[in-house]
Length: 185
Image (tube, rainbow, N blue to C red; front, side, top):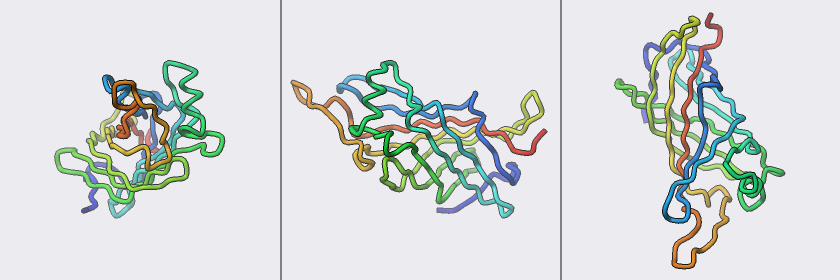
């Protein structure tokens, strides 16, 4: 895969504006609908080296998971799912970033969940940079990736009475980041 950076994104580090960003997931539930959750505590950065090579890294605090039922949140923190007592973070580190002329973005990297690390590819777009109303340079990154949760030790499931399972194995990761350049005004 070629590695390229948009000519207009300055070298340096772009950090996440957490007020205007989102890190979440979606999974088919009970065969008929899509269930979504988010993580509230996350951090990361887009770094662009002097040679123009971009790198995207991030981490999520697993116990910051937000769902609409506190009992479900507790179950997601248990060993059946994330096992937050023994595995407190999800991490991602890019190994390749491909930016198309049209803002198309493909990020390859290593995703680590619950002690399991596997390659993953996120696809989406990059927008900017643009100057915000306070004079800060900002970039927008939208990415989605689909992973098989079982590869990461998230194997809990329950059969349904008439066939199928409570949860699909494919989970869509949904990342929407507004990043601000460090050292900007």
